Image (tube, helix red, strand yellow):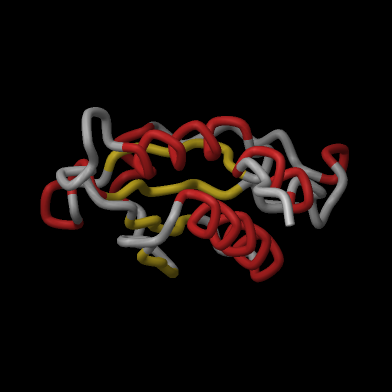
Length: 127
């Protein structure tokens, strides 16, 4: 079996649950307001390979959108055990920046993991 690259594997999870046209274009709250909004659910992907973590994150985004959650948290770690750049953190940020289910995202506050976690504002239909 040929090894598949993580970005190729993600193509299977790129199909949104809703059409882009069904999403309301409501203005985003301020970043500080979004950061203060309570997280409705979180997942921890520490120690997973990039392939597995991104696949699981794609499923988490689908679940969040389906359930109408506005804000979720993804814990990816700071990358302290990576050689060089933090690999999972970087891959997760790139993935979130490209996914149309994500309206905004940012580094969590220090009390919730700081650079090792990301809050995600979900693009929810009708909200």
